[in-house]
Every structure is written in C-alpha cells, then in structure tokens.
Amino acid sequence: MTIKTIAIVGGGTSGWLAANHIGRVLKDNPELSITLIESPAIPIIGVGEGTVPSIRKSLSSFGISESEFINSCDVTFKQSIKFVNWLDRTKHGNNNFYHHLFDMPSLFGEDLTPYWLINPKEHFADLVSSQHAVCEENKAPKFITTPEYSGVTGYAYHLNAAKFAMLLAKNATERFNVEHVHATVNDVSFGIDGSIHSLLTDKGELTFDFYIDCSGFESIFLAKRFDVPFIDKSQQLFVNTALVTQVPTQNFEKIPPFTIATAHKAGWIWDIALTQRRGTGFVYSNDHMSNAEAEDKFDQYLGGKLAELTPRKIPMKVGYRQQFWVKNCVALGLAQGFLEPIEATSILLTDFSARFLAERFPSDKDDIDYLAKRFNETVSQAWERVVEFAKLHYCLSDRSDSAFWRDNRSDKTIPEGLKQRLKMWRNFIPIAEDFPSKFEVFNRENYLYVLYGMKYFTRPTYSNAEVDKRVVQHLAKMKLLKSKMISELPEHRELLDKIRLYGLQSI
Image (tube, rainbow, N blue to C red):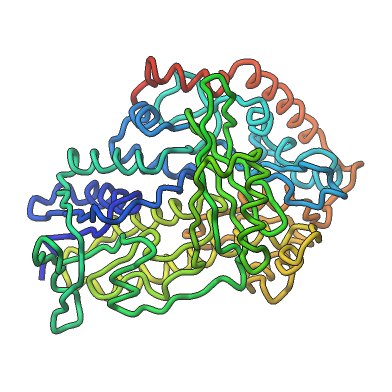
C-alpha cells in the first residue's frame, strides 16, 4: 500500500527538523501530505542551544537564509568548545583548558601531530590550527562579505532553541506545505498487523499511513505503546541531572565564539553566549553530588545570583531505545534517547537521523521492513559511537579530586570499543582507517583535538633531529596565517551587528 499521509507528533527542534528534511526530499510528490501535530499543553524543553557544523548543510538545503536565521534566532557563531579544568589543576594549572576546534588540523597538508608529540609544550590545537588563536581573540569565523553558509574558518551556531523551532516551523509550512495542527494525542489505535492505525486526540481520531514520534522524553509511541526496551548508559556516562538558567547580558559585552565547558568535581557547566543572554547549565551526577551542593556550586559560578535567575532542574535518563523504527513508526530526537549535552549531541543525532530517514523514506508499506532494519542498525551504531566519544572526555582526565573522576577512569565503565582504540592509540597516532564506518558522527579530527588536548601521549614516531623542512615550512605558514586572521577578521559581536543591519551575501 502506498504511503500518502505522514504524521509528525511533537514540535520543537526535532519535530520541525524532521518536517523540513522530509518535506525537502518529498516535496515533488503531489499525492503525499505531511502533518505536524503539536500539543499546546506540552512545553518545549528549549535548552539545546549548541550545534555542530553539519547543521549548516541542513539549513542551506532547507532554503533558509543564513541572515534570517541569525537575526531571528539570536544566533552567535560557534567555532569550538573550550574545555576548562578538565585536567588536574595542581599539575596543569588553575583554569587549564583546551579547544575542540571546528577547523581541520594541519591546514597546509603536513600532519603536525608527530611534531607535537616530541614538543608538547604548547596547546595541540594552537600548533595545528590558526582557529585556536581566532577563538582566543574573540574573532568571528567570516566577514560580512563572505557568502551565506561559507566561512574563513569552520563554524556552527549557538541559538535560541524556541525561536529556532519557530523558524523551522515557518519554513516547513510555507516552503514544503507541512500542515500544522494543534492537538493533544491521548492514545493510538492499532491495525491487525500491529502497526499504528490512528491517533486518538482531543480533536478527534486522526488517521495516517506513517508516524514519526517526536514527543520528547515521554516517547509516547516507542516507549509507551510499542514497549521498546531502553538501553541504559548511566554506568558509562554518569551525569544525570542538569540545573539550567539564563543570564542577561549587555550589548557591549564580548561574545565568546565558542561554548565554554567548565568541569567541576561531579560534572561540568555549559556556558553559551547569545546576543542578549547566556544560557548556562550545571550538569552533574546526583550519585556523586547532592542536589543542595549542586545548587551551591552553580550559585558560586554565577556570582551568587542563582536565586534571582529562577533555575530549572531537568532529570536526564541517559541511554537510547533498542529500536528506533517499529512497524510504521519512527522515533526522532529525545524520543530516541538522550546522552548528556557534551559536544551538542542531541541536535546532532536528531539532524543525522532525520536526514537519513528522509533520504530513505518508504514509498510503500512493503518497503518498511528492510528500511527499518537498515535504519535501526545505522542509528544504533551512531548512538554507540557518540557514547564512546562523550566518555573519552571523562576517562582521559587525570583529575583525582573526587570519586566522580576516579570512577570515570575505572575500566568497567569504559566501552569496550573505546578501550581497544585507546590501547592502539598509545602506540599509533589515529588515522582515518580507525574510523571505518561512514556513520561515525565524530571522526579522526575530533578525536585528535580531545586526545591531545587532554595530554594523551602517543609514542612519538620520530625525534627532534628528524623534523624535516616541510614541518618547519608548515609552522612558518601557520604563524603568518594566525597573524593575518587575527588582524583582519572582525570581532565577533561586530560581525553580528553588521549582519543585523546589512545581512550576508546570499548564495
């Protein structure tokens, strides 16, 4: 039977990303309709404010103007995540840090990693990329004359999640004819084959051919109606609670072009600067820190202003569903699962899954079984690799000031695949072949920045005496490029102000 009607249940970032991805791919099919059903009674969580560079490709493919996106969603540029105090302060100094940059390392073609391993005196990221200096100088990743979605350096965005969902909704309804219905889904009815037949809502019964569950943590279809088991990852990733709040800022304040992730004794704090405010979150393990101590620590970070900022407390169930596609229903976003927000994993996995679903969307119900099998295998692998990459940040730390950090280094808490890679990387620098799957969402370059940012020393492959002319020439070129970019690129807020006035060059 031909699939002609699609229901997306739930709005927010995941629902509207799905609507745009599927709407874009299927827009030329006049017989197909897409309806997004959103309950006015369910608030958007609205704390997923960080993205990764792949979101630029998605937004561009949707036909959204980057200038409109920046101006309507309080957007700032994100060129890195700056990890502060993730190493022992007695050994590496208070406020020690490293950058996980968005630029490829070793721009001029010569891999500088072997050279850094015999001369690990400076930041790895500063040696292999000019973007480290750009970030530290609070510079923007492009000029006002740079075309939309292009950059002098690699970048993603910080954004207001609620406004982002509104922009995605506007684009999906106007460009891809997605119908937007306000209704609360109370239950579903099933057909004789076990597929979902219809939705039972406060507006009556609504029948569709295919259903996409974007209902958030509730996972009203996969968890509650299909009883798909949950794969718990809390024994590998310990943080399970977040205190979140927004801090007003002034127009004259500098805007860091990166996320700041500051470690504390039982987790870390995110700090994301938008144009008018900072989004902050104190992420912690309540098995290693009491709620009262967490509030006190967060209050200290915010300069004693926590009480006046009305924080929200968000429990986080860490893990993902054993399957994401069952019968004629696919889960996306938080309905798939949740891992802590390090490295902006939530929007990343939602965008990845929604794009993959759109590109392999079934035209007929006979296509569902084999497409579902492929989707479940691929997306499960992506989730597992993200678990490993998130764990990397913790198990490499040499902090010993609390049980939280010591427990993170325990062998039994490290995924087996990551353990094998770390063992190999003691003797060999990571290469592309260490990441054989096309569905690795974090690759060699990402691992290099974290591994060597956290002082994980691979056995050097040559000595100081063997440094050749090409490396010396590369270093000289890098020095000149840093100087040029620092002197020429605009200050971050300056560029955002210009975009608000003039916009960027359209593609």
